[in-house]
Length: 212
Image (cartoon, rainbow, N blue to C red):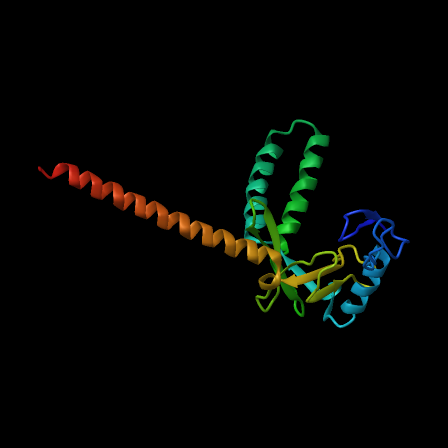
């Protein structure tokens, strides 16, 4: 704990002292902050009431941006395969082609699976990954000590492709939505200011043309 300052004489008071050594004023109690372990226990207690989804029941569908990039990359790999001169280079390119096709094929949802996908939004000049549920609910990663609205837990049995654990929060409740609304408000004000300046310049130009 850090020393406090007396409200009367502004003298520093050690944490173990109950009163100021200079003027005798009773020092207020120091509010101790919770430790990392205490925060983890409190967060785990809150997470027990949050809805949970097994990662094995989720089928992640690539976003439109990811599909477009992989289709373009597949065309480039086909061109490289035609120009490859050694068997080793051709095998390496074929491996990349198989991985790219497997990624594109994940757009097909198996029977009984609930498709999830991702998209990106810009908040404060950075990209934020948004998780979109089958019901079109949008989630973002919850803060470390913040509340969560949904938990994704990995499968109990190890699979070749598994979903890691995630603590998700609804986008409309997150800090990112507040940043986006602030940006939209600033852009609206800026657009209104530009239109006002343009109208003022046009009015000034017309005034100069009219003979006095």
